[in-house]
Length: 130
Image 1 (cartoon, rainbow, N blue to C red):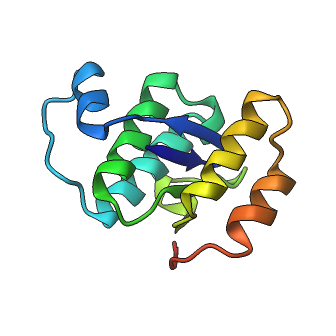
Image 2 (cartoon, rainbow, N blue to C red; image 1 turned 90 degrees about the vertical axis):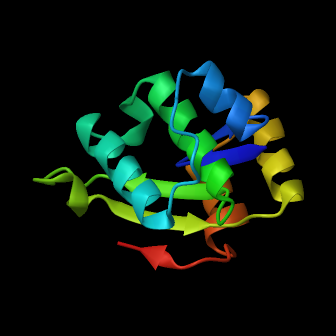
């Protein structure tokens, strides 16, 4: 399974197996609210999700995959954020064909925020969460 976190495509395979391999013991499906809070916490702690530890990003991606309501997540931490709850969040669902295209672009070193915006966020299905 492919999950887009900000502008990185993460292949989590089988989310259950990925979580087990990462040492996660609570394999219950998280609610969307829980996912939003976890992503906000990670983005705030690292002053951006791209600065978070790989294991944190992999775990978050696998939990998103396990939830199944979205396969794309955007967590933007404002420079002046004073708490994790100030991190802006958008979740969406992109077709597997789009996700495969983005993965291909990433592997070729050509994935940009403009490409992600064009193929995902302009047309994403799903509500904006704050």
